[in-house]
Image (spheres, rainbow, N blue to C red):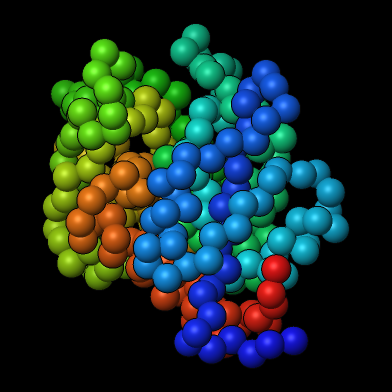
Length: 254
């Protein structure tokens, strides 16, 4: 078994999405590129119910990246479905939740994005705001991209980063502009998660686990941000995965 050293990239498992009505896995290339660009070795994790395969995934990877997707089944957090629900593939939901639970036990670093962030919250016992326009703490701001425009950067909003949070230390910012691509969001925070970024209308934009070295969820899509804000998050994730590979997890080749 080879030892982990500086010439090896930490292995980052990226959960694949599935087409809801077909047998195809899918994943935007931007996730793979964002991991590669900061020194990680991305491997795709096809969703499975096989417990032995999931254990093998956990033994191989040094970090788990949960990408965006459609909506979780509201029954998972004891709500009835909203009319706007677009449910993600049930196999992916089961797989993501199982992998998050396994990573919590093993201490494997986790970076959860958009639906991945929401799944992290539900696994910890929290719930979801199913339709942001009906959320009324303050005047709503746009969170979902304008479907009449093209690209990932056509709608933006500002988030306030909580001082003293791990996210603040990583980004070295108190505010940042993020892309607006979600119509659902975290409601009640799950166990051991703390708020680390907030939009002006009260929507939770990022969370982190206070008891783990690296477990961060963001509601925006940093893989589509150019420049330091997105790169810093991925770089911090890769740094945590490298530390895990060297000190906490036995390094294995795929």
